[in-house]
Length: 219
Image (cartoon, rainbow, N blue to C red; front, top):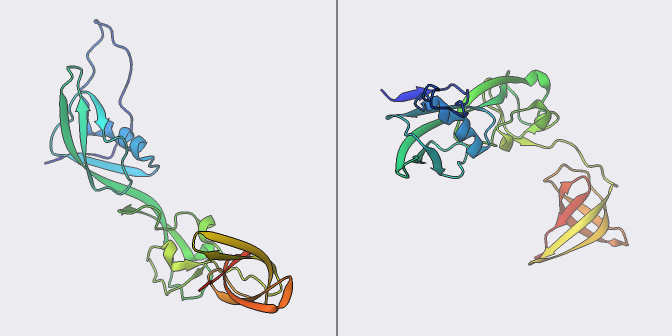
């Protein structure tokens, strides 16, 4: 059976005199705060290994990407010897799921959401806080109990026609800005008509980036 732990209490660090009892052998649980520090992970973490943890300080890796399933840790003991330990990692995150079926185009409300803890392989793809997504709209049907993916939501805030915006044009590595006015209303991501503020005869088609910026396509 592999060693296994989900305890998050850090190992004791302190000074020991000759009369003090020797420190206890390092356990799998003592690796959790170290790995969380190397990965800057704030959620829960489980660690398991098939052998005991070597004595000494972890010298490699110097960082770990959250979601990594396994990693080889290298330890340097007081005698200078290098030992390795392969560990398996399970990362947990509190995410939001649908409390009922949500139809495509519906705005997300607090009553649509329930919280759940799941094991993840990729961070940053799930909605984890209502403040991130309230007012956004689903761009696909979401079934009851299904996790809310950020990629399945769009900003539902409508930018009204007549709003003054900056028009961005990119040509290769160069970019230029001018003032403009929206002819059509739309949401971020929509392609709408916009006219230059200094010349009402020039009408362009541009993608809404946000409420203050649109970008034209330059062929």
